Image 1 (cartoon, rainbow, N blue to C red):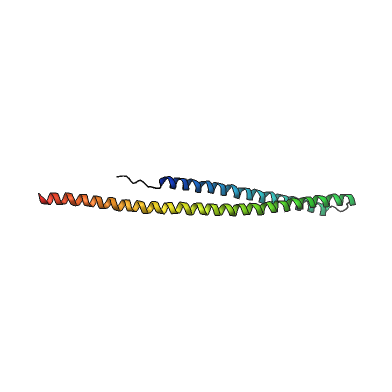
Image 2: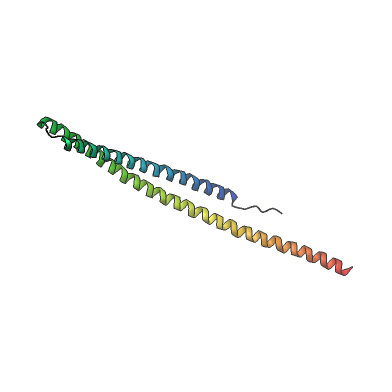
Length: 142
């Protein structure tokens, strides 16, 4: 007799849900990393620009204002990316909780599978032993 898990469809659904949550987690982490990469790029760009300004000896007032406005714009972009990064971190944390819940749900069903499979094996073993005992009893009687 072959083992058939009574909650097999639930096991498949929960396994699929965990896989989907895992993929969504990877997507959220990639989004966060992209924001961090953009932020690092802007910071490096700003540092390079500030260094080039510092290397110049003479500047007009107009040029200083233009440079100051450019630096402020870059700072604003960095701050905006910082806010996006915080939001992305929140989304990652939220997704981590969903993934953890999906993992727990799957684990419960896997545990039920193990219990049911063990009970099936025990029952099969008992039936087999009973059958062998009957054969032994019949051959002894003859």
